[in-house]
Image (cartoon, rainbow over all chains, first blue to last red; front, side, top):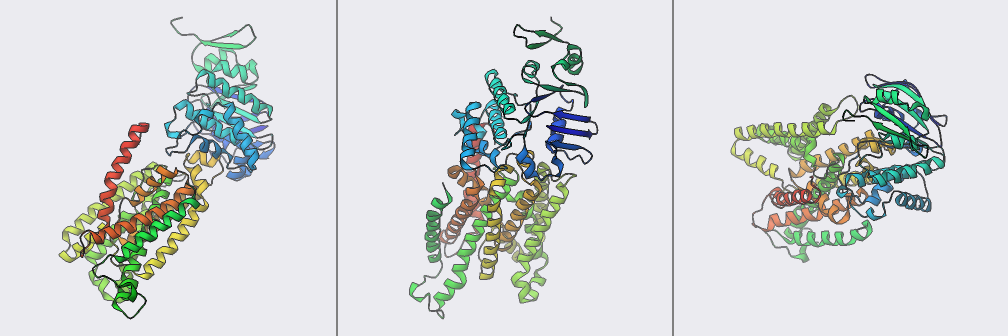
Length: 252
Length: 333
């Protein structure tokens, strides 16, 4: 379980409690600038907050060195750049750095991630020549390589589906299910409400840096979502019982 | 190419070119006399040519190594060590000394021997500290600010150097100009010894962190999230680059383009992995610098060209080619 309390960044976010369970996907929702990335940055330790407390499985992450922290928590931020001609396979393997895996474990993990994210055809491509979507999948793969060696690690992904085509969005979400099954805490910032509702187990809704809703799927009410995203949102349930959302534009 | 496979051919090339370079000079040496230590041939060989070739090799290795370190620091394959202000500060200090302090330099033999290199090194380190101080903000150092401030310091130093040259007498002007173009004419063994120590320490320190330096290239945030101590890494790179370039500039003056060019060349065949890039750049830098020095003495012998002119002549077009290739391949430089 990933728990945090008293996350306060003036003008950006103010949050008393945060909680995401192991074996579940917790989705952070909110419009642009609502504080989603700040929350993720605070959980990841990128923003130093002496007053705050961040615990993973009861262990205080702020007491840990960057290295021990990296062995427990794998994080994808929004900003990714690499101007050097590393091959995709090298970039993916960089995720292994904080872990002490033996050769065969590392290789098994590599093959699994590469297959699951459909990267086999890209392994010898040089990173700067990738399209945005390909680069994003490479970075996701690198972060998933970094997941904790034993159960109970945390994986934080900030807008992982950005620039991905429909098929690869689902590839990533399917693999996320597997990470849940392994017993890790998964936290994602997502913009696609349908995907969020389909895969998410719990939710935090942010508006202007404050939590305006948290809990299971029942928190995804059209009135609240319309307020958070500042556009009227309708909710339907399809034949298979899945929630579907649609923004109502003036032309409708 | 692995370091092991690279080492033998590179060392062989270094030895061959050094051998040729040792034979070049205004006097033809008789190899039979080299160990007759009282002979004039032996004096020329042991006191002039050998330290000069060794100094060229060490300077080339250090410039290439610090070039690779600077490109890593800025996460930009086109960055050059001069960006952190070290060469500008060294140049300014040296030219000031040459133009305004000739009397001080001639005052004692010790001053004549170490005055200029010491002033140059101090100027380089002070300028780097100034650039860093100005680029420091609340949390760490902004790389963009570092780059821009470095450029500004370079421009200011350039202007002051121009002014000093304008007021300098003919002899001082000539000395300053030669220094600014880079040369190995004053090589001696204590310089070689000092540079060898700096090269060894720099190479070992960087090589030990090579894997972390690869992660650093992903960005400071990503490197931190992968467990890298980003402050320690940043300071390691800045320290190695400024001290490395500082000592080279102190002994050999300004030699451009080697720090930029060599890591680029090595990346083309060996890829960007710092574990291979750092040692291989050092070796290639040594080979190319010995070659450039040999050419500088051969082309217009018995006179010689300042070696910095040759490296810039070869490096300028090479740099343009690299920019062209990067633009056509990925759409960005």
